[in-house]
Structure formats: C-alpha cells, structure tokens
Amino acid sequence: MTACIVGWGHSRFGRSPDDLETMIGKVTRQAIADAGIEGADVDAIWLGHFNGGFVPEIFCSSLVLQADDGLRWKPATRVENACATGSAAVFAAIDAIDAKRVKIALVVGVEKMTAIAGAETTRVLGNASYISEEAARGMTFPGLFGEIAEAYFARYGNHAETLARIAAKNHANGARNPLAHMQKDLGFDYCNRVSESNPLIAGPLRKTDCSLVSDGAAALILTDEATAKTMRKAVRIRAHVQVNDYLPMSRKDITAFEGPRRAIGQAFDAAGIDVQDLSLAEVHDCFTMAELLIYEAMGLAERGQGARVIDNGMVYADGALPVNPSGGLKAKGHPIGATGVSMHALAAMQLCGEAGEIQVRDAELAAVFNMGGSAVANYASILERAA
Image: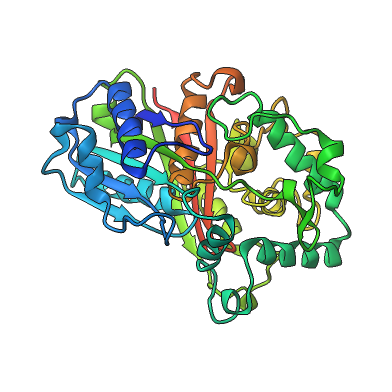
C-alpha cells in the first residue's frame, strides 16, 4: 500500500499577526476543502510543532479540532523532531496509512517564531543541538554551520562565492513565490559582499547565508492509493526514509553529511530511481552551506565538488534539476514545525501543475529532503503524480 497526498493548505510565511490557533485553523480548512472532503472524513491527525519556548502552548494537538467540528473525537498527536518536525508528522501519517490503521489522515505543521525577541529565538533553536558540547559553550546554529563551512573551506578551498550564488538563486526563486517570506531578488553581488546590511554572522557565513525566522503553517490530506483514485488529484509517496545520526557534531565528519547521504540514497533505492530521474528537489537549506553539502549528498557532485552544479546552472529554476524552486528555507522562510509539511505540499503542487510562477516544466518526480539539527534527523521522500 502506498500513501498519497490529495490536498493541501499553505499560509504565506513571514511575520504573521495570527496566533498559533488561527494559523492552524486556516491551513486545516484550506487542506480539507482542497481535498474535497469533510472534517468528519478524517480518521486521525498529526500536528508538527517544535515550540521549545516560542509560544506558551505546549499541549496543542487538539487545537486542530477547532478548525472544523467534524474533527471532534479524532485522535490527534503532536510530533517533534527539531527542524525535521514537519516531515516527522508526515511520515507518522504515511506509516499509519501503510499499516491500514487509518484511511484519511490530516497533517498540520506550524510554528509561531516571532512572538519572542531575536536573541531568545536563537537560544531556543540552539537547544536543539548537543547541549553539553555545543549550546552550553554558547554555540548557536549559525555558529555550528559556520564551523561546518570553515572545515569545508579548509579542506576544499574558499567557497564563499558559491554560497553567495546559492543565496542569490534561492532569493530569485522566492521573488516569484507568493507564499515566500522574502519576495525580493537580492542578486549575487549583494549576497557576495559583506556590508552593514549583510554582515558576517558566524565564520564565513553572512546574513544572506542564513535562513529566515518566520511564522507559518501548512497542512496536507493523505490517504491510501485506492481512495486517492477517487479524488480530484493525487501525489504518490513513492518512497520515504528516515535516518538518524549522532547528535554531537564531534562524533562525525561534519563535512561528509553522512546522514543526508544515507537517507537520500536509501530513498532513491526504495523508489528505484537515481538522481538524474528527478524533475526537482526541495531541500533543507537552513544555511547555504547545507544546500552545498546536500548537492554532494544527493550524488550531483563528488565530495568537495558541489560548486560545479551551481556554476554550470544545473540547480537553477531553468536548469536540468531545479533545487528549491520555492526559494527554500533561505527565502521562503523556516517556521520549524511547518517546514517539512511545506516542502511536501510544494512538491505536490509542482507535480500537479499548480505551482504558478514557480512551476517547473513537465515536473514528474520530486525529491524532498528535510533535516533536524546538524544533519542528525534526516528525512528523504520521493513523490510522483499518481496516474
């Protein structure tokens, strides 16, 4: 049995005036309407919500029920796995469908990140690292990925320009995405230059190399393949793989991205494809350094050679394999709990020809890669339009 996405809802990411409950309600109603079902048709609910101190609510799974009276009495569970929280919720729903425990599942991902001050946001996110070695010595995630960039540069040469090209690419893509937090094409020169408005944040990483702090929500309706054949549209989850690595960065080669490499490779194997078969990929560019390493983890280039696919245009919107046509976390934004759900929704939009200005021509097969922490919780999916 294979699970299929048959509907979705998606807020614009950014600084939202809505509270958590309102954000959840809006995308839930959108997804239910998009799938052409009633709330009562849903068998179970999974809510992806990291929180960690962004908002007071720590018991919020039943907030989804407020969106539609038909959802009352449905089992609802909150899921959390750092920045891969959204995909963790999606995978939980897929597994329940594959096990024939539910026929129709509702997945919601949400995060309200802007209700607290920026320094506190950085601290909350830092607590998703290995505390005793990382957060306890004052390391933040920009600092951790700054260390990864420094190690990569030491081994393979200075790739600051490569990171700037990745940032510029994703901002150009985000400028065409009405759901993106930042809809402005910043250009390579701006991203490549350290300036008052684009300062160094950590190591060689500039502000434009770091993803955005955003509010946002996304929702999916999933069902089994037999039921999906009766629906208006359907996107099949051809493969889904989760791989976890050690939490401490000190226990792994931080430039190898072994967890992402294993998750993506196993997803390719399960789907019976290789990277050349993909039409597009939505990947976890929490920092531009992460996207560069994901190119290599996907097998687009050998280790240390990821710059080649940005230099030759392969990963641009009009290239052979567009990566992050949505703008990615870099421009679309990164509301933690919503990110993985958003990635799956946007990939499904592409495969159904509903992606508007960011539509990839003749999209048939999409990869999604979402990770938590420093390549610790790694989730890879392969999606295709169901016949």
